[in-house]
Image (cartoon, rainbow, N blue to C red; front, side, top):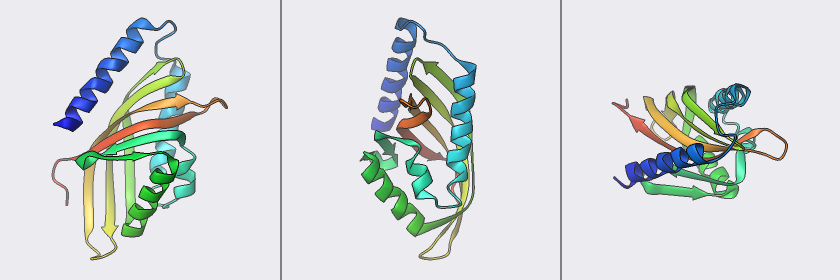
Length: 158
């Protein structure tokens, strides 16, 4: 329940920002860049390329994953990715952004993902899907980075 209240609060705050701030809207070029960056991000999972993944996060990024696990900052996020890729081999991964709303140097994005991975400890194969939502921030160099991310798995997971 705490997870859903967090998502609701995030959505509410974003709606306030988008209705109050001048220049708010959907800049299609920014939307396309964020979507392309997301496609690149998910393509790194089967490669287990933690260094490239880390380049896509802000220095103060925060991830809220299932079970109320909060990972704050790039060092903690790196450790989390290292642990994941030590535990599993990702065979396939795909992701689609269903919505991107740009407001200045910030953007809200949500979408869905699917993956197939092998657990190293028992060689079990898992097919899954889920949803994600988060905030992206334009860096001083002009590219878009993940600042806040939350995700959860949906449906039956094999």
